[in-house]
Length: 443
Image (tube, rainbow, N blue to C red; front, side, top):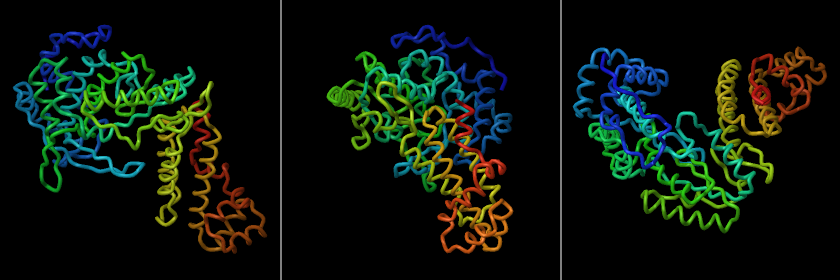
């Protein structure tokens, strides 16, 4: 992978949507195949790993493949003849019902998309709005939620919650390519990006052509989504709106319901006429922020709003915990605790900005009750239950009553005696993580 590098990308200080493309935009393919860029792209794909595409090759096989085939691959990119493989279709259930369609590219295509992403990001970043928070360097969902809280604190007490229907599946190829071509003048690059958009999907051994949409699952799709919606961001800024957008999730904050309804109607017209996208009428609404969710969060309070966990987010958390603590799957407690800890740590890493410790405490208590239920089921025989409860400090008389009870495991798990024996101290000794402890560490 020894190639000549070229000059770096333009400085972010030149941020202008009307800015003319520089010479790097005309010779992007040479930047993409530069030694430093391909090494960085390969390393990133290996770190992310991910499922295999239609060829079955995982990220671990990428480096040996490039060692043997980089010369011809580089030449095909420079000549504009590279043809991506179709993506592998994968369905994942949505929290609110239905499925989300993912398109998993091959490891080689992920590598090339990553190399393209690294070259394009410095060109497009200066042109993006500061109110766009999704899939951008230095931006995060946390910042988007904090911005929304700030608008509410300023007195913008209604939200225009706009949901784009099947956004990633309905992106118009011609429109997004026209927006890319405003900045990118290297025709080989434009041809390659369009080839990725039209690579198709492999379903039941048959390649189905892609006439619209940018498949979720590849490194390039988030950038193309931001490019597609960048005009919406600048239109909202031109109108002076307070808003926060994270990918296709856009919330606009206004001071009255009537103003919100006007904004909803006008923005809907812009989205459907200019961007050829569809607003999901069922999921979009004008309402108080406390009754809507944004990136899994909601808000409570008026002049001094606090970020809280949305009700549906808590429901999804409990659904996942139920699966891990299903008492019929015969898993060991150590295995359950290991999986619970991994999930709880990751979940809290994202949701820790919510300032509702009482909710975390309730969720902790419920989770430990689920674990007590599993442990009672594991002990199973009355004599085992009695012996273990006595060993944990429960008087013999109470241990006999519990072990001989006809109540189900779930009800027994909530009795004062079992709660005392298998309380917070017990589970800490078993190394089960607590949401409250994690919250306290990050406060």
